[in-house]
Length: 295
Image (tube, rainbow, N blue to C red; front, side, top):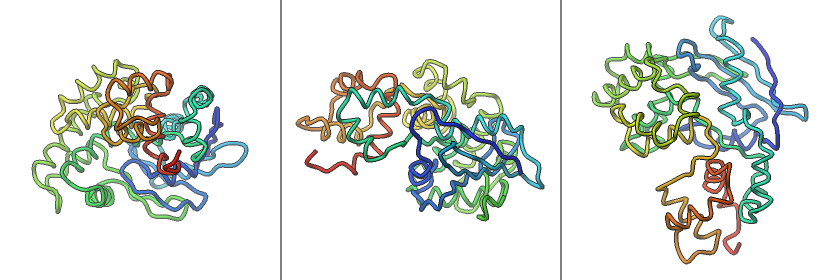
């Protein structure tokens, strides 16, 4: 086992991240440790990571098969991205200081930063699995795939399984409950990842529209899925959340509009959220229900 520490720049709550629900998972009860199991960005390794937090920062323990782990620096960097700890959040707090609505919501969820999918690769695989399935059904199949074809590892006393690497996924020719078309599309995701088309850093630093257009070239990845991968897997902070009816309704309510926010409303209101428009969109969706209706 290898340990590391991350020092958040700005407010951060590990509890908020853990209870948010990670990637496709439902919210969980936080016992002081956040447990992760994932395929690493190099697409060659799988690891488990146990995380705790104290006044000095966030502390992690990396667990690998037979005591072997992926390159530590890469695992630490990926973990930081997944928890949005690779970003200085003082600017996020400045957004709240000038926007009373954001301040009110953030006060109900102090330290909440967007928890991301483990990687664009895993986000794309989730998009394929979840198409026309409810979240519970897709999550159950995703977990069975991980336990059967990925890596099983014990993380802080809890058995977990990391999703298959692209190589492992390409070896799956059939799986109980998964129709052949989804297997074919999962293979397409695996091949795209192996070709470097799902690299987090490239997606993060590319023009968002161009990145989404390229993602839509992967079979099974439509406009919504491409947007999800960019917004919730690459680590972008300031790409506006568009064409999201639930967020439009939330903004309409919180900002006192006569109905759901229009596209023009979202552009106008979103100007005050720069350079954290993605973060604010996630915050409002995740915590607006904590704000009293009368507000």
